[in-house]
Image (tube, rainbow, N blue to C red; front, side, top):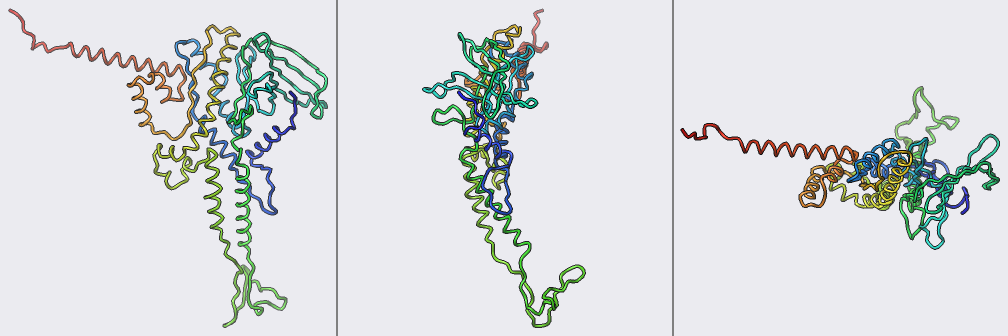
Length: 441
């Protein structure tokens, strides 16, 4: 394993991040160049569709762990962290979640992928042998490299912290070294990719394959703008008799004055048919459609099409099917990683003195596509009646913003109301009219 902040992977991260910041590294045409912020809009749409609603993390039959999960999510602002992390994952292709202890509290954060250096098994590119987080820091006149190295010893992960001199991408002598046992059976670092291909470890960016389309879109829009600029100041043709003795037009106080005698040729603008319609159709019918096919960007989700104005939620979902599959496939990586991270957060919480047994949570995440609430309620009702789901799970899906504690409280409230209805019904069935009772004299 080598630490190199200038390798091909890091150059790719920088190129993708420049796209997100609307500073593309494209070969620009001479003159006016307009960079359209489509990459940023696509990344933001991925975040909005993936993490608009809070995650649903549920632990059944373990109320202490369930309460702890809600507390850990709240204390770490975990839902906000995931929303912010989603941008990095989409743009750069991945990011790293980290579990750690800070002043006796279980903490969760995320790290940009360019600071993450895993050592992989040469025979299995998904198996991690050792992991390093490295940050170059300038202190005064010197540059130091801070490292956290995670390796497994006797079934538990140790963290080796180093501070070393660093110059021209070369690591020098160590200044400080310390070691600590995390007591975790799995690494406290969890890499979450946007998508993977061919068994690769590092993920592929949402912008993979879209860069040529972004470049062409910017180039075409810039061309149209330059054409329109030329039309704002066209040349004028007319008779020589319209010129004064210095071969110039005579100007009035507020405008150009052109003296024309009867029968003389009047001046006119020299213009040509730009055929901009073909450019607009190329942008809409070729470039944007291609972008829709391979990214979450879909005009129906923005209400930008004539059909979407009066479309139902189900109709929009069907039209945005490609979008939903891109989101859902990426969320599979998030779900797996979040389960591990929340489980380790409990383990570290217990190490600090909390009294409960950590449990692996059930995490539910769905793309926040337009919802038909009536249809969704009917679906959940059919699941409950047919025994395909529990009431608690249905409550969690219908109210994705609920914590596990709120789901439990809502469930108990439903049970109490049902018991009250049954009690009142029983009492009413037992009551009779006194006039109907026959008394034996």
